[in-house]
Length: 291
Ligand code: FAD
Image (cartoon, rainbow, N blue to C red; front, side):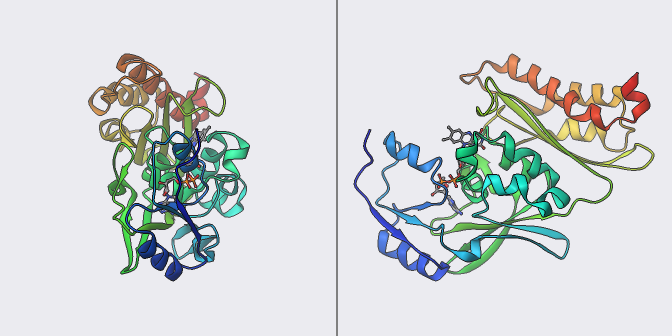
């Protein structure tokens, strides 16, 4: 299908963006990587009055370390997350997640800001930033505000973004020596959206005790689903087959998956349990893994 008729403006600064948003009206949409938005135009699922292309705004680009956080500009492409040495060192979860997103052509255009703003319930990056305890940096004509990732996602394709506001960056606390980060998922074909997935961030002490744990599922609900009960079942325990089994059992209190094109709630619950064990077993002490 052909796109609807609409205006197009390309801006190279935030001031230019605010002016373009005023001129284009409330129905205008931001264009970043275009990997989701352009498909919705083709299907006439969205008919914006105009597209405002932000890809030349330099202040939305780049990855750097500030104080205790890794700051990732909103225009950072998925492919950059996969190969950037700062991401690999300070937020390895994001480096692991990026190659799981779609295919190389999409990873070369799609951006972290676009993925977070879209809030697809089966997307990897929203779950990762919640698991990492990241902060989403937003900006509008009135200035910047910061929102905890766990408060940013409000449900199916819904976020805390206000009209006239954009994602400018994500700030991720840098990984400590005790930090263990992993992402696992089940897909029908390589590159598909996940049927179910799990982003896990744990802090494990030298004696194997779990000091902190955030298990965040995707593809099993209306967004990034924090498994509070399963995480609590591990905190303060030694990581062992027994504590992993207790966390699996606790998932019954955490997840209430709806049916989707991949299957019903029972299948999703089963996959979540399998993924939990698959994610955590590699962090067991070597002696337990061999058992
Ligand atoms: P765009 O398409 O440009 O924009 C998406 C939405 O976000 C629009 O509403 C836009 O206005 C808004 N927006 C963009 N940037 C900002 C910003 N900085 N601030 C505020 N609003 C903004 N994603 C996955 O996570 N996992 C997958 O497995 C996966 N598979 C895919 C398979 C296919 C075939 C395709 C086409 C896409 C897939 N995607 C997948 C989506 C892909 O990752 C997108 O790139 C991403 O979700 C959106 O990023 P974008 O930069 O392309 O955003």
